[in-house]
Image (cartoon, rainbow, N blue to C red; front, side, top):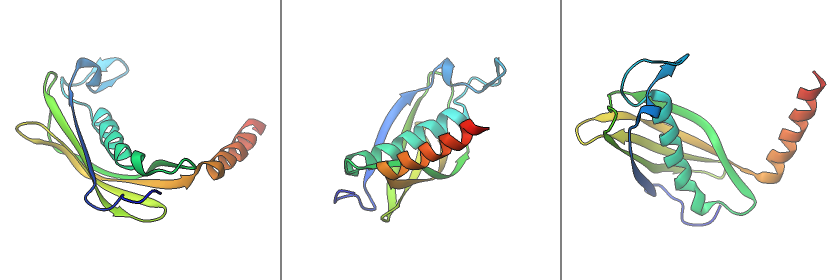
Length: 136
């Protein structure tokens, strides 16, 4: 990784909840709020944006672990601020504290850990797995 990624580096952006972001199962909308799946997507996106400027050409990152709580609602039409703050950096892992908040309440909070790896090594692992999967 390039120099500079250290605890305290952060990314922040806002989204507006729309109808496509509601929880829905088998076409049935449950509530007119931000779904947990959508919230986690944007938390992961924020964490990814933390690492992107620091990856070498030969490196990539991938989700490794999530510990997220969805603690409050954000209704359709409401603005939600997502933030990721780097809390730990090692050669193979980057941990971020992630939050989602509206003007009035916390929507979600937790940690997102990303694995850092060499693209060539991952390409080989995936090719090996593809060979096994297609033999079935």
